[in-house]
Image 1 (spheres, one colour):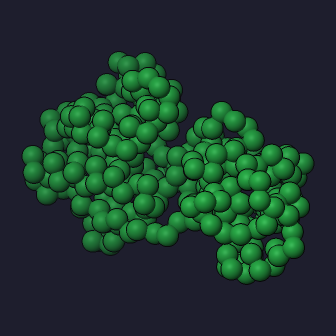
Image 2 (image 1 turned 180 degrees about the vertical axis):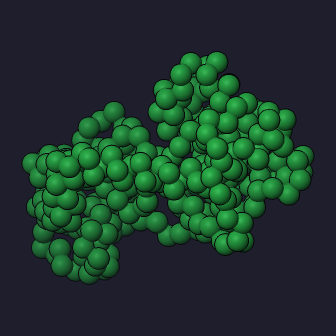
Length: 303
């Protein structure tokens, strides 16, 4: 997300000038005390099976500007303390990249820019929300009560694991193309990915995440896309070996995605409509984001 936004900036000088100068008159901003829930996912890449259960939020240029300001208020050790930094740098076997450090700050800007009061999060995002709260409190302590300190709404999000590594989450950035089921995958691709999914040498279908992570991931996916309970899925799958069961799950996913894929293909033929939706969404987001960003710049002395 940060990379996508920075590509839109016309050089570093243009970006810095944008921090100091408004680009258009500020729209009206309603201060009605309404509670605001902010929910979003990383918007880069093609949405996958796990993303389907979440929500997608558009973004505007003010996100990058507030992110830069907040980044000036947080110390490096605080960001290196985050689990995401530790886990990904360990996996990549190097010291990590700036993107891993700056993305949580951009995420905080996403939330605070809309003066959000509540944010639905899964367990893996609790630390990032603590950073959001710390940044809001730090800003308020220095410049006066400005940002609401958003509360976490811990949600029991369905955890979809990688098809190739059941110990890891399904991820859009996974280099193994067989690990992630994307919404845009063809039925043939979905079948191939489930055929190659990692399970174990026991053929019976059971649900035991601790000792049978791969098969349990199949069961969890099957339950999620059909609306059945895990117990019902296991009961209905009695007598099937894991090889046949993988195809049953693949068929269930294909059926779930069929109307979504159909709508995607339909929308892709009407680019004018898509551009209009993007423009309207951007305008609505900016109506909220622009005055907040301008006020922040005044408080910190940029305006």
